[in-house]
Amino acid sequence: VIVGAPLGGVVVGARALAAVVVPGVVAVAASAVRVRHPPNPGFDRTLPRADGAGTTGTVALELGGDRASPVTVRDRLPAAVEVAGRAAGRGENHAVVDAAVGGDPVRYEVVARRRGEHVVGPATVVATDVFGLLKRSTVVDRRDTLLAFPRIGTLPTALSTALQAAYHSREAARREEFDDLRPYVRGDALRDIHWKSSARHDELMIREYADRADPERVTVAAGVEDSARDGADAPADRMADAAATVVVSLVRGGASVTLAT
Image (cartoon, rainbow, N blue to C red; front, side, top):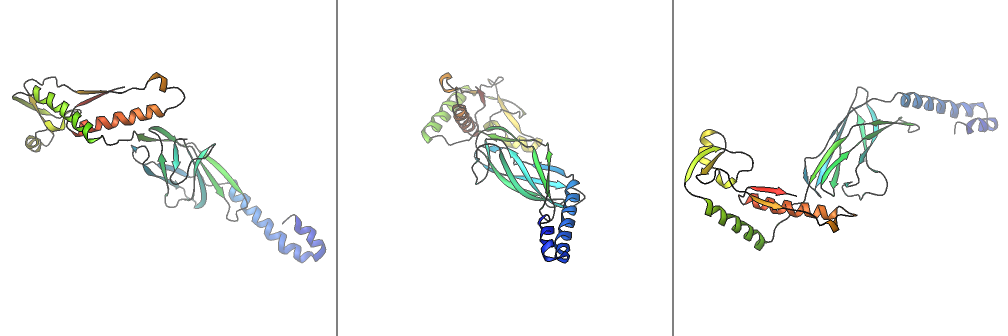
């Protein structure tokens, strides 16, 4: 418009030329100055807590600064993480949100489709002038790790009952007379907690029996056949899901479990 206005001014007169060109030049100049010195925001990203794969979580972005300015944030996501409600396309995967430097945090929801550690970032902050004429991008090299656990399913009732029965029958055979109390350590069976003593000592206390100086554990062994390893990670994911389901079922039933892969 600014370039074409002088040509039109030749036809309609200098007054029309000034009415169009001068405001346009001022707008472009003001935009150039603002974009040339974009705000340098402090960038903070808060990821959802670790949860099972397939669970929706909220990512919060906060841009601090002493000069308020509207910006657009393009947050890079790994291939296995999608913006909730939107399937990841080919090429780079981003979450795009409008924010304001110095304003309230903005949020978007993500879903990790596979278990594992997924690196989110870096982010690109795009500053635009108030007229929308020019823009400038700044890359914020901030990376955070989103952790997704294997999916924990529910064992069929018959299988769960058989596992618990096998463990408790061996456990009962090993139990003899009460020997002593000791503080709880990670991996101890929950069924051995002595609640009255725990309340008195203000910490969890475990009952020990005469024959349990070296408590036996249930060992769960999980693996993937060599023929299933090539070309895809899905067999390993299914193995992890199955192992986690069995282990959690046993732990909830009071067993002490060791997992070998």
